[in-house]
Amino acid sequence: MNKNNTGGERRRFIRHPMCFPLKYKVLKRGFSKKREDYSSTKNISRGGLLFPSRYAVEPGSLILLKMPFQDKIFKVRGKVLHCNISQDTNLYEIGVSFQRYSDAFKVRLVEQLYLISEYRDLRAMQTGKDISLQEASREWISRYSKRFQRLYW
Image 1: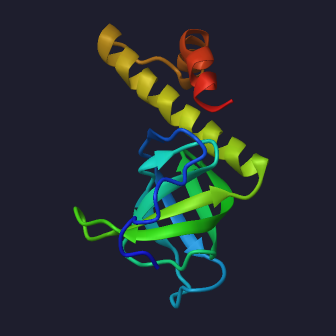
Image 2 (image 1 turned 90 degrees about the vertical axis):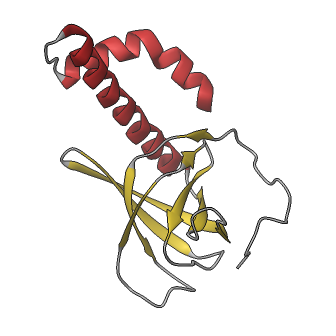
């Protein structure tokens, strides 16, 4: 386990800050507790994501991430690439890579849903009336989907 990041920059994809809730459970290697724990994403990219944890997780471990949005739960499997202690928070920062394109796509979808939900809240504050998630989705897609797509593909 790395106590600090002395291995140099290893990123292949641009990361951007995004915070949404998740549950995680280590499936194999290096985790003595068999329970799920809660966290939230710190940043994401096309290739993976980073989240803080109270517990260290052995690099190379397979991990199951569950990301809720409203009444849905998106499940994604990944592999722990690194686990570094943050000097600022004293939490472990867990770097996870997606193992399949479909997992990266699910996380991208969840991110987009959270952005649309935030847009919906903003529009409600601006107009003083609620709009449906479907209406907010149509507006957000017409205004921002091209910009969002460039972040990934």
